[in-house]
Amino acid sequence: MTLSLLGSTGSIGRQTLEVMEPLGLRPAVLTAGRNAALLEKQARLFLPALACMADEAAGRSLKASLADTPVTVRYGAESMTEAAAYPGADTVLNALPGVGGLRPTLAALQADKRLLLANKESLVCGGTLVTNAAKRGIIPIDSEHSAIFQCLHSPPGRGGREADGVVSRIILTASGGAFRGFSREQLRHVTPEMALAHPTWRMGVKVTVDSATLLNKGLEVIEAVHLFGLPAEKVAVIIHPESIIHSMVEYTDGAVLAQLAPPDMRLPIQYALTYPERKPCPAAKLDFAKPGPLTFAEPDRKTFRCLALAERAAQAGGNTGAVLCGAGEKAVNAFLRGECGFLEIPDRIERALDSVPFIPNPTVEEILQTVEHCR
Image (cartoon, rainbow, N blue to C red; front, side, top):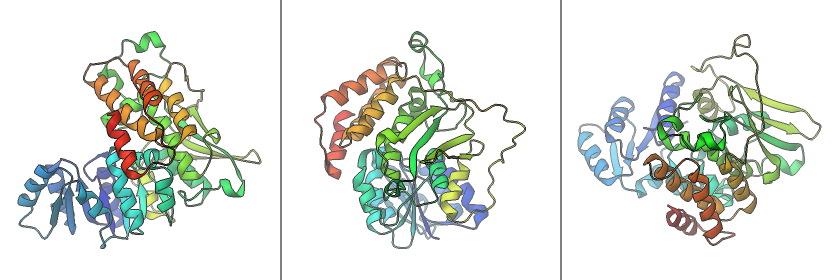
């Protein structure tokens, strides 16, 4: 396997490189947004054929600093799609943040690459545009969707298992975020620092806040609808604070299959890299004598309204996923800057969903325009 790693300086990208080394894999392409210093270190360590920076100024700096190496450097937004379609790689792992990952996802699929997807906005915003282009399916990186994939035993991204009628529903587990069990009155007083203290997972700033509002889980509902070919009403969410069960599949006969592991993203990353094989992984193993009870609860959609809003978008389809992403990004940034309270985040998203014109079958340009309009 030869890999283009898009977003190598982010959390998923760094953990991917950590997983690749023991497997004897080296990236053919590395990309980043602005972190030229870290990308230079990675490029010197792995000597990929191509290194790309989305930010032009950072890219020019990187090109100068890597002049003594054989690494080719490209920069600018278009370099991300160049990296995704790079002819010297047969596999693309897209760990780019935000809707900027959509065009590279489509470029990889149009170039008939094997796609390992950690950029949820590609599916939340791109929906059927992405799945229609996925001739070989998509291997998910998100822990929840990887868990479902492992329980289904079939490549997602091209209709899943719904067509043969064996799946009753899929059940996404959620930790509940930093404020699980909080009342609306308690949520009025939370700060960005409190929202960024996730009890289980190490994630980026935006995703951590989205986890606290349950918007991230709602985005995962939309992602699952497109990945596994199920209608929105067959994608359920359950709160599971221990984050040991990463998601479940309920079959029509009532049997439920679950994937269990300690919360460590290296496991779903490695499974995607080595699929259909399984190899030893540096992630910790599950000790059934230590976790204690596994608990479950229904999510509180009245208090954490972002989940209900995302489920509404999952039912509606069209460009509503793009509205959700753009408005969610704007609201979270305002919260982090202290310009709005935590409970105002869903209010702002709802206003956008109510006001932005609905487009049932948006083009890529219309999707990106919708996101930009809502930012």
